[in-house]
Length: 497
Image: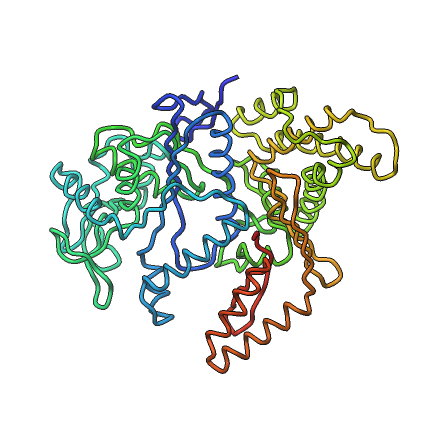
């Protein structure tokens, strides 16, 4: 069976055929770095991480690029509010983003291009569009003339005629400048007093949001890529405008396949700051294991909305405990079973069923049903060993089951190394070295952690930052990450060491 994926452009499943045999170029729209990441980010980047991992599982050489938007209105506003430079602000939240992604076991992208590093490429594309009479200058701004691109709306399946209802003629934008058509969008924005700017043929200013990705895709991956991915909310206008810009500039398709993940809902409503149901990743990880969060997200098909509830997370936590025990089976019972760690994993029905599920548009709910079946088999064997009963399977069969579970979980990004459990005021860290039969098992009393946090807080109060940093580093070496909150509170959580 060939891999088939749902292409938003055609609105149907298509057989995946890369541009180059066994090589896949993927571009994923990344974060705008002015705040902590939320559950919507977690879902998107877990989904695309699994897509990448499965393509690698299938033998593809994947080149994965995810941009960073480090200049836009929200960033400028936040930097002004905190009285810091945009570089100080964005560098801080890039670090926070990296921490969140590491917690969820999301693989690092091959490249993280920043918008500010590709200004010249944006200017070149904009000038090309002006030269082709597809863009025009109004004062110091530059707009894209959507009516000059006949297939505008092909991704979101919208027509300009339907969108134009109630809007016609020449309209003023928010700054009072006049656009030729209501849906023309900004490629370049003239600088405002006090804002950072870059020089251009049209005067000092900064790029519009959409042109950033067009320039970074071209620079990092070329004029046409295999897969362009992002959240469902990016279909229009962001991805639609990317297509209009890039394809008018190059005359070539921007991407062969467009993929979009569904929303995370809170109590049946889309998560948003305006509804005050906004959940950051790290606030969720204060209560739930990161792999339970990952499992919760993968239990729904990536294109469908998913509802975040306490009941759903409790269920995912119990399910993860079962899988976690299966992943640890070789560590706990290798000696009893004369375990041969060098035994080769053979193809089997479970792996075939897993491939069939993932080949059907990355159907992770079905794939996870196979994971649960394998984990239950190992749970039964564990119970027999713990009670001294005869094994249901022989050593060779158990090894194959455990290795199959490990292979599938690796592909889904589920790892015991990122797990932590709290019991009776103690954080028990179990960081498995998955390629050996050894493991680290440390127990750190919570009282010790809280004492060190209090000492660090006092050191900072006395402006003894060297001592504060020493305490932070000491805890980090023990697998504890400190997270300073607004108002002076400090949270802590497990990290892999």
